[in-house]
Image (cartoon, rainbow, N blue to C red):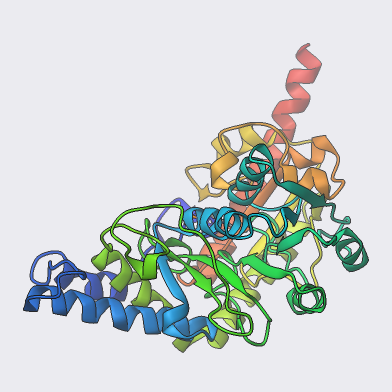
Length: 391
Ligand code: PLP
C-alpha cells in the first residue's frame, strides 16, 4: 500500500493511466493546432477535439455543439455568471445563488455586484440544503440567473436540482449549476435535470488539470452568453485561445471512462465511504456534517470534538492525505464558510475533515486509514490534556 493513503479526491483525482495513454500522441506526433485548416496536422488535432467534445457531451446528455472547452471549472463559472450578466444588459441584473457555493461562484458574484448587478445569497439549513420556497420568493422581474451548486465540494450534499430547474423554468429564468464535483460521480443529465448552463472540470474526474468545459444550452431556450476571453473566436466565439489539444483529448477520454463505469464505480465507492464513516463514528465525539440522504457517493465530512484540525492534519499527513475542506481555502485556518452556513459551531467546524474517496481507493486503504485516524485522534487528545495540565 502506498502511503500516505490518498483521501483527498475532491481536491483532485489522480489521472487514470488510460487517459495519459490517450493524450500522449497529441504532444509529439499529432502536435497540430486544431484551428489550422490547411494541413493534416491541423485536421488530426481538430478531429481529436471533435471526438473529445462528443465524449464530454455524452457524459452529461448534451449535444457536442453545446460544449465550450475552458481551462477548468473556475473559468467556466466565470463565463457562465459574468457572461450571462453581460448578455442581459438592459434586460435584468439580478442573480440568485447560495452561501455554500464554491469561491469561484461567490467571487464572480462579487464582481457582478461591483459592476452594477444585484445578488441574493440564499441560506442553507443544517443539512446543507436551500429552501425552495425561499428561492421562489427571491425571484423578481430583474432576475436573469439562478446559480446553485449541484454537489457541495466539502460535504457532498446534493441540492434538489430538478426542483430548482422547475422553479427557474416557471419564472423564465436561466439555471446554471456548478457540477464540478458531481459529473463523473453520479448520473448528471442536462435534459432530465433541466439545466441551461453547467460547469465541469477534467481533474475532478481522473483527467488532466487545466481543462474543463461549460455546457451552454442551444435550444429551449437558446442561451446566449458574452465571452470573457477575447481573441481568435475559438469555441464558437465563446472562448478564444488556441485549444489545449492534449488536455481536451484527456478530458474526453476521462469522461468516456466515467460513462462506462459510473454505476459500478459509484456502488463500490459508496460501500467504502460508508464503511469508513461507520468506523470513524465509533470515535468519541464524532459526527457527520450535512445530510446523509442525498449526497455524493465519495465524500463524508466529519467533525471530532476537542481536536485542533490543522494540527491533526499535520500529525496524520504521513499516514493519510486529507483536508479540512476545499483545497482553495485550505491555507487559511478559518472555519469553513460551508460548515458555518450550516450552523456548525466554530469549534466543531475547525475540527472537521473532508474524507473523499475515488476510483483507486481500496478496502485495505480504508481499513488502514480508520485505524491510523483513531490512533492519532487518541494521541492528539492525550497531548492536549497533558498540555492543559502543564499550563
Ligand atoms: N467548483 C467546485 C465545486 C470545485 O470543487 C472546484 C475545485 O475545487 C472548482 C469549482 C474549480 O475547479 P477548477 O480547479 O477546474 O478550476
